[in-house]
Image (tube, rainbow, N blue to C red; front, side, top):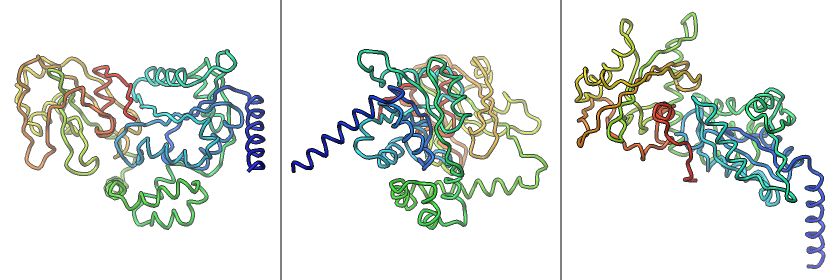
Length: 374
């Protein structure tokens, strides 16, 4: 018993001595970790060597499950925690970070606030903070966004990519279990492997696999085009009396998620006319077209490269602010179509909306980005 206590004291003394010799009070690592892999762990381990405290900010938090974001924040946090022992976890702060796809300033502000609230002073002095990333390119990018903090590069682990891991897990005709049982050990830490094995038996996985099959069919249909296709769509942001008009998707992709009404434009159609047609034909919104046109307050192009599952897709969104009324306009879905509904703005949650539609609404209405539900 005494020997064990002596070892514990020696370990604590060594830990204190190592922390007194670190370069920084706090190192910040930002990523999506979809999923966490050995390259991510190399960066975090380097950060633990060089800082008293390490803040890991997990991006794309509160997003609906998709082929690009298969795992929720809580799942990714648990995967990361399982890669480190108790002493390292004590020095790790793992926090969610909501995307702000069309406003870098909002995203930077959220990062600044989280780091300010988490970073602890050392010996009564303001903490020395730096951003850490794998490779010079990522560090340089962070440095341009946060000039008040230093930038640190960690060794890059070659040949590991989260996107390639996801492709192997969801690719048609391949066995995800075989991949996890054999080649995945070169990419993923053991604790992450043990988490992913039951995941591929879940309903979430099979729904995403269905979306992958649809995506492959979609790509085959355009495989002989001379250039990669770019799609043009329209969306309507219709707001009245603190409610926004949404539809619940009845089929993949995004089955069960809420979405803005909209769709593809016809070849000889103007963008606004396409948007009004979608509201008239698919939603059967009981508002005269003249009233809708008179309620148009804004329109914007949304072009984030990864915004749509189908590939490069631009959408022109139109913001209609209807006059407040005691009763919301009646809605009726077209036969076999998505189910329309009015949703209170206070009830909007990013993880319940399809693709980037929460951020489109946010961009027009200036909704707050702070979420504390985790």
